[in-house]
Length: 162
Figure 1 (cartoon, rainbow, N blue to C red):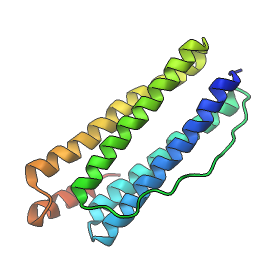
Figure 2 (figure 1 turned 45 degrees about the horizontal axis):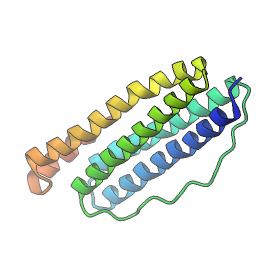
Figure 3 (figure 1 turned 120 degrees about the horizontal axis):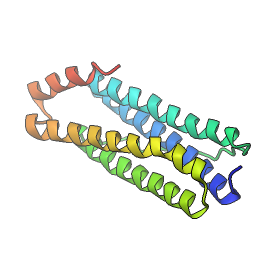
């Protein structure tokens, strides 16, 4: 069974993961509005992935005989300056989430909660991938540009995500 301190932190992470989902869905909506449907699809898939992350925490809490307590999810921004701006915000957000996961690992170690520390290792690895994906989008936009034909081709590539 996990400590109250750990339980509170894991419940807070559920909210953070749901906010991530909300944020990426908002980005997807803006991209759809701009007729960048490939990017919109990519971020919609990302939003669903973040919801799955929240549910991993949710299920883990119950596996540890804890109680899930859900809090209100803050509204994400609805307007963005450009695709490049969205990519930069995504990377910034993923770095913030990485810090949150690292803090959970630190807390698990302080609490000598080895089961939770092992559970969190999946998220540590996942955050490496999340930051890499965000960096790659930025690098492609810097290489190809975020206007005209280059953006059109990159939008097509982004839409191939399953």
